[in-house]
Image (cartoon, helix red, strand yellow):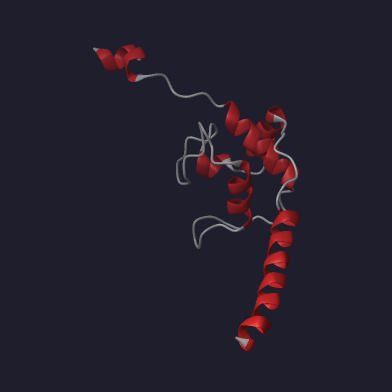
Length: 121
């Protein structure tokens, strides 16, 4: 019991420190400039793996309906091993990622198969 009383304050401080670190690294707003994001998407070479419209290629499909912005930023900052390079905030600032995420949200769903004449012949 004595050990538990000593451990709980340490655990609480660790959780507070971890949550503040996440809060500091997470973007403060979800608003982004989609037009700027489209430009950055090409400038930062994201299109080479994820396609010009985010539909994927060598990299995963990101659009339409991208993951949440917080998850998007977190994955860019800390990708799964060997899935893609890590991009720190010094390389791609948080605002740039918010803008790219806003761009991905502007990409519409593809047309339904029934609406593509060539596929209905």
